[in-house]
Image (cartoon, rainbow, N blue to C red):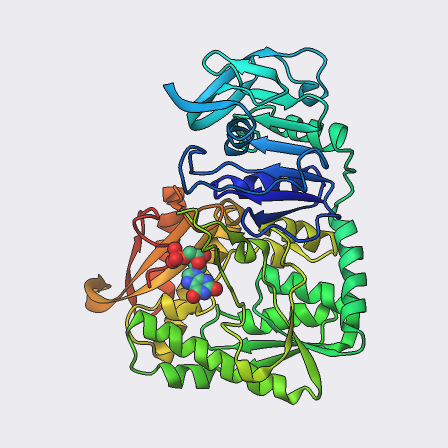
Length: 507
Ligand code: XMP
């Protein structure tokens, strides 16, 4: 296991990804709240930081239990920190040190740079530079502008690099991380999805024993993978609840329910459509719509969970990006914890213990784990779909008629993407029902009907997104199909806004 101490760099999660890609397990902890027991960590990595080590309020970690005792790799801020407080000197740099650079010197015969040649491209992002190395420092690599681009401390397994090995543009970055973790720290590369499944199933068995667990399934990747893992561990003691809020895609409730049953899950489908739609009637404010849906979900889920006699645990599909305690942008000790509940917030009165088997995984790892448990692509490859469902794609108030119009439109669009081989090229797609009517003509008749907007985006995490350049022929055919087949719609537009400044959903 590898410990990554976070000093607030925007790249810290990338370090973790690269380490995991090497099939080595790692955890990120804020520098100001390191784990008390370090015995399970075989190596430590210090991240970069938005701070200058010369700033008074800069992170000042206590490394006395790490330095010289475990293999240590200090990246960027970490490298400057070791220099600044170790007898070296860090000063503002004269030239800009951002972006691409090439290693012009590499010390020969160093395990750290094994397989890396002079000329290798690295990515810099710093405004201070290490002018003098700390005591016992030895230069391992330089670039044209940065003499001390990498160094080690003599007689210690302590290595420091000014550039960022974790970013894609450092071409040999992953090799350097591998050299450090495998050749120098001696970690083995055994953290595979299969190994994760075996270990987690054993841990869940031990932790839960014969207790009963409830889990809210959403049809999405995370809750499905969490359910299958728990099912492997405790079988029929896992009670899955899948709520139809009346705002799902066309046929989604029955299709997903069938798939879950096929997987052998003990799942109860609860059709609460009327309850949600009644609660939403007449409401057109986006935030209030979300609140109403969130509250209705808690009520329905709570009612259902109470029907499971003697239930002790609530399982959730929370994943790692939701739980990483990140060092806030201001770097202060007021680390913010993002909390995330897939069930929309757990009511206190449920008083259940929480189990989250995926809380250490990134999204792509959840998919890999799902694949290793033979969950089909129709679940794992599914586009994200928001919890409030079609409610935030129907602008203005919601009626059953509008829901069914949008379900038809969405179905034609999504099925079209599949038929044209475009579904997997798009990160997320959907249709919005707009609160405007416009004039049209069908046959010799004037129409005055609804307008829908289609949206398809590419993204990696939903934080930023761009619209997808779908083929005109596809858009033409889809528009025709929608207007001809869905009564009440006479106009289709395509959303060409990026995020930011627009969001993916319209509400
Ligand atoms: P926005 O619209 O903020 O959406 O650009 C980013 C991503 O988040 C999804 N989304 C939600 N997911 N509950 C969810 O589970 C919500 O309330 C919610 N709102 C937005 C959205 O579909 C997109 O993938």
